[in-house]
Image 1 (cartoon, helix red, strand yellow):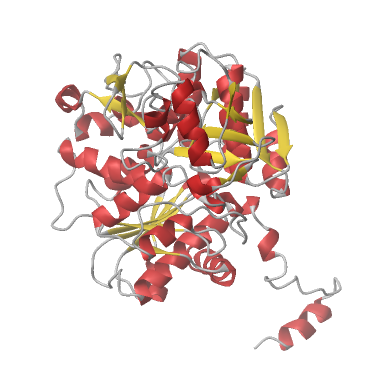
Image 2: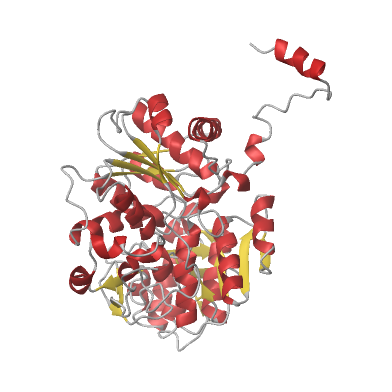
Length: 90
Length: 422
């Protein structure tokens, strides 16, 4: 199962856990699997149309998924996925 | 001494999510916990309007704190008391070269204490950190912010942790280390540094000026625009060209002009100030959003070019920067390195102002916008934003500028040289 790093604003939904694991062949499938474990988390990450929210960055093994295949980015069991708030810096 | 005391109460109501409108108390938080949108400081403008007049502002010391009611700290500033009110220079020689009637340069190359506009944001952020009782301040930086944070932390007696990309200009590294800061070079781009800082900020409880203190920090930029309006004789310019990295400054310029209008400190101009954005061609994600009419940021993975201070490939305020620019009727441009260096020289040779590479980007963009017809000759005052000092970014000039002419110490040596001058 892939490891997912959870940012502070979402940890209330993961019982305070910084890292969780989930099953899925793509980033999108992982998020769907997260939702079954932690109901309510998907709507925090994705907007009504199912796309990643404007101010959320998702990294697959340190690569921004916008440089890969977005939610279709394939995921292996050894991968680490990070969800990071986009608003910082500048 | 001032005849009118600075404010003794805060006009900040709290923080509000710019995306979904959810309200938060004043705290070192920067992201809406529901939608991840940026949190903005909310002010009680009705109350500010009752106390803040031109006469009150003019009676105060020549610093950014003359606009204290519109800045988000709750008492007198703990650091940066002398920051702000840099010169707005009427640039007639430059105007002639550009073919414009009226050009002004807002010169934060001489900002106190570290020669960039980042002194403004950090004065607010470090003062705010002290109000919150935070013991260590930190930042992710492309250089200027590193200098400002390290200096103001030292002035406040606080330890600082500064994270920078490992390949920054030497002057910007030395100009940080000198203050006793702990400087960490990260093997990666600014965006890698920034992401790391987001994770550190959540874990260590430090005051990252541009992460968890960001809503307060960013407000400091508004003073740059307030000063322009006041220095123009309480009027707004027809155009302003603003450099963009993360894009925060351009949004705050728009906000500041809007606030002055709302408070009646300036008359509403016949046509809204057109706010133009500038980035170097080697890293122009926000300019590309404007030029390609696209709402989403397409990050630049590997920024290149001489304007390292603007090399943010994944700008946090990209979305709102574009909105500010388009909403004002402005446009955007991305000069290449040769244009940037040529513009730095033009500004120095015509006005005696040595701006950093980002200033070359701004002027280079202005030249493109004039050629493109977005800035017209007789539109009214055009402001070129210089936000940093050229002494910090000399590398790209070394090979471009003429070397000193070498002679012996005798008058005949000089005479021989002089005879060759044309």
